[in-house]
Image (cartoon, rainbow over all chains, first blue to last red; front, side):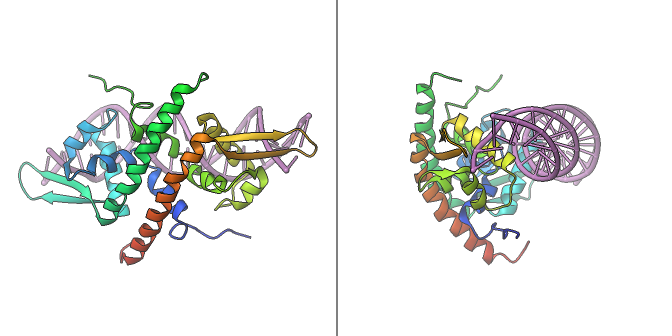
Length: 114
Length: 114
DNA sequence: CGGCATCCGTAAGGATACTG
DNA sequence: CAGTATCCTTACGGATGCCG
């Protein structure tokens, strides 16, 4: 028999889908201190990436409801991205993730292999 | 100028890489209560998946040091997977992720679109 | 400045079959 | 029971170029 679709039911399955994007976590982190403009965001990303790629990632996060896109009607254009309400709640995850990430980095140093 | 490689330096970049696997979070969750055998793991996965796929995911997590594979030398074979030390620490992340995931699911219900 | 349309290459996941 | 080897397919990210 088929297993039921668990997206929107199981918190782990749901969270996993949101986090699979290659840059989602880092973008959320960059926005956690307040609104950031598009180009500024691109500059702060950990790897060089084309604006096309960043644009797509932002679109996904916006569609998922995690971030908010605010467009100022002016020339030259100005667009700011910030965390939505549910995005702000995600900051708790970021905090714990940061802590664990650092511990994991420590762990990596203790390994002889690889 | 080139940006430096941040894996193993930045906790977010590092954590992101670990979590990109399509099933990593859920596997970690399934193992968080103690060792689980291979087939049992497969049965409990949220979607039908071939053992080939599961096997690969487990291999990745094992190589990353998050889980431990214990093989009992017997016929028929018996293999148990469990969380490593750093994997156990990840349970804190799982806990916060679960909480947020549920809030996100609530949020999804409030949306009219999609 | 902040996009979108398009094309392309790669890596990851899935299906199938064989093994100790 | 718990894999590995192989092939196939798809989705995603990256590169390039055009636009308001």
